[in-house]
Length: 468
Ligand code: UD1
Ligand code: CA
Image 1 (cartoon, protein in one colour):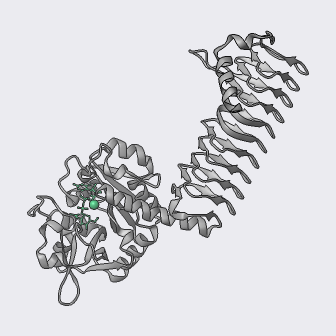
Image 2 (cartoon, rainbow, N blue to C red):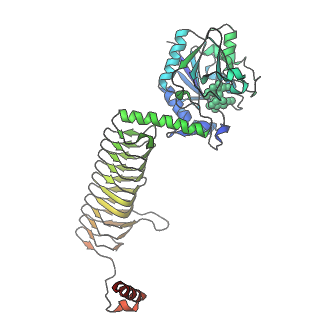
Image 3 (cartoon, rainbow, N blue to C red):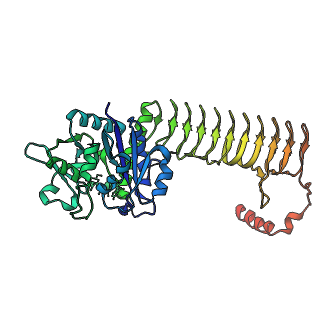
């Protein structure tokens, strides 16, 4: 079998993005563009992948890690010059080399595979992947001769008006005979409008040397889209999002309004889960089967088992066990672990806390740095006071206990199982099993005191008015 290699061009700055972030690192549906490219290539069983880095080299390496080899292009003198930097790694190898850009995130592994196949079948030394579009502006145009054979590729800035009218474009993806590629690259000059060493010039060089050069026109222009500015970034995101959403729907997930549903590429969702409009699912979020993710919820790296309902809530790096529910308007922060059957109601914040099976935290409560057992009822307006201004402290509440509304539980403190905290208590000491803790001032009623206050006068006036 012929050996297969790939080169990803990712050394450019991406000036047209007008960004501090290097172009190929801009995310599309939660993954850097260049990572999308690598992820697809990884599915093609290649012998070696080399990424050309320059601008933001460290950051690109950090993003892609050891999944690819790297060659540094210290100065960005053009795409042809970029490929030449891989010569030390690939130059003497026999086989086929696919080249693609780090700013074309929509190409699929299947398309790359088809290009390899076409290239091998035609026995060409170079095959350029092309596409047809009514809006070719900005792309290199594919010039064909009278026999419809590829002659050369002309960049936008070098194209004559007739060439600009050509609607077949260079997608920026090619397959080459590896050795022919590196030989021809040495012949590329920078005699053009941009003063750059253009990779596409290799096509003409090989053609003039009498080699077979071929073009493989793909059906879907959309897939070949290159991202040079933020307008294109949004367009690519829209296309990628549609693809992701269709995949989930085909897998048995209901998206009530797919156009208003934003799901990152690595999110996993189980069957018969319903996702309502305005939902954002990010990062490595995993959602089980039979869940309902209600309108305007956002989940970042959240882990949800089956049968969970989330209503208009925000979850980050949190976990929920089966048949639990949350919301509306609650917030799970990192290391929140919500147990099976737990009810988290509205306006509740949970951080770094485990909440045991069937426990209820219904309203207006903060649970931070705490371990709650099962079957506990936490009353409305309870605050787990975990911070003394310098350190965080931990609270434990045992099974079947009851925390009355409006309580402050000042950590560090332990409330045993089957304990009862009276409403409005400020708990600073441990509570034993089967005990009742009450920690608040006793009520004093002072007869007639109402009339001492301005409210009495105002009320009298209102009463008078209501009579007439
Ligand atoms: C390039 C092609 C054009 C094609 C289009 C498809 C050339 C000269 N033109 O144009 O024919 O239609 O892609 O999207 O190749 N890069 C480097 N080092 C450099 C220059 C660029 O690594 O010195 C990288 C960039 O990071 C980028 C890729 O090469 O990922 C393409 O460069 P870009 O400047 O975006 O080329 P286009 O103008 O889009
Ligand atoms: Ca580009």
